[in-house]
Length: 260
Image 1: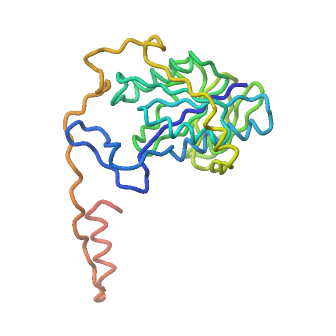
Image 2 (image 1 turned 180 degrees about the vertical axis):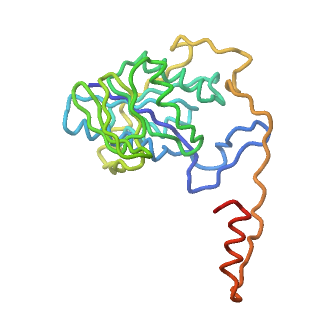
Image 3 (image 1 turned 120 degrees about the vertical axis):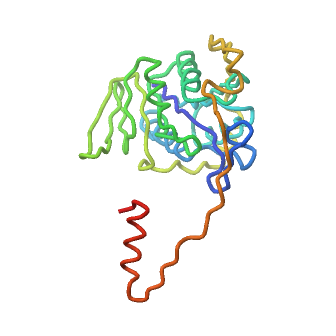
């Protein structure tokens, strides 16, 4: 079985994240670039199945700048077998539609039995890429799974809804996304770190994928950002001093702000 894990490199969530007010895009130079934690959990789901079936091949797939190589090497140190890096200037500032187009084309090129992704990234938080990729590939998808079970011909798991917990399944090939309720990724050992340096990373361009970008959309994506402003500094809050009427004042404040 070939399991492909969609991996995204994001700005470190423990550092300040900023928008470039000129382009409207995330300023990725403002903080260190790391693998998104939810992507690491997706890697762990794949590796857990590989532990029980040594014939399983785990491939990492990501789209991003040249600096992405370091993150892919880290992902390989966990135990993945190889990686695919979609690298092309025409993907600069890609939106959800453009990103899903490139990832689906890469998956069609490399082949897969199961695609695993995080439910949403910590930078864009679109939460739509797994479903959009599945739609482009015309395969079933299961999203926001809190647990995953993989067999030779299907994937299944638990998904919470407003009315209860659903047990869902899909025949392979399929695309699934997981939530933060699945286990954290294992810690890479010394052997894994050294071995990651020798594992193959295949670089694919849009030309390799048979995609011809529109020159007018290059470096800006297919969504146009009209304007961007910096977030204003946080203003001082309202201080309520209890002089016998604090409860009433607090209730009035919450009602005024439409919080109750």
